Image (cartoon, rainbow, N blue to C red; front, side):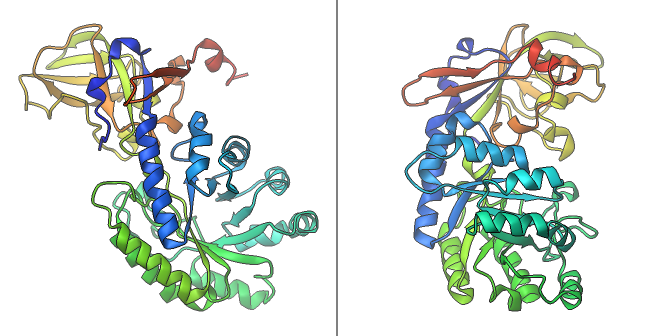
Length: 399
């Protein structure tokens, strides 16, 4: 899924490897999200776990209502770098489990803090009560598990049987019987079931949430529908989303939140790389200065086949190659692709739609250099290398 025509970009101007993000496309996505928020009354947060190129923090803050984080470091980034724009930019955090040290720091600046279990909520009450005395406007919530799966990949299904994510209805009922004061200072609920999906899976999820937690919803001030909403993708039914949000908010008298991640960045970026060598072992193979293992691990974890500009499926065009990374891992294979002409050493290739999740999951296994970060304006052709990485970035992680 690529909305920007990156074929207009002169690849010789880029460092290699590099992630290139089109700021025009980012603003397009943000505009759509702002329109949905305004029409529905929902507040929309940028999920930093999916896209946290904070060079674009001020731009994001001009359109969205804040950020959501998966822990202390992302929350600090949202607090420090996504606070421009003349609107209150909230900082929300949810983690599957918090350390005491992280809770202490988070309570000094976050606006919403969501707990994954009643045990952690109860365990940290002394810290929570002390924080409320200093900052009475902090909102606390619990993540619920509606036990309704919409994900097709088990690794990414937060509602799979035996999931550690969220509190199931039976467990919450038992906890409330043991401690009727459990929900004191709990003002909202959070759930998450989606992964790059349209409105219909959300509608089914909401039906499950209402069926299992309906009585509790009436006692809340806000409900967070989580992330995974492909709101900015072509064909997403935004009218249905807006209608359902308005109906849900009116029925339960709550503020609705959504926290899309990939919707901020889908169709906005590429990974540029270079052919380092071409070998033959049963088939032609091209070795790149990028790596599935280090630079695009989702291709191995999901797995999925990333698209390459001007390339086809294996055998579709005249020349087929297996593309592999430069690490020692035997499985550092991206996939098989075909091209109209033979590849050559020094040739640049573009992997499409690499802004969301791919950028945040990179590693330096084998001492592999991280891709540079580049901003491109597809309207003016202006190019800015935001950051390059070298030996010190690798070295300082280890001791």
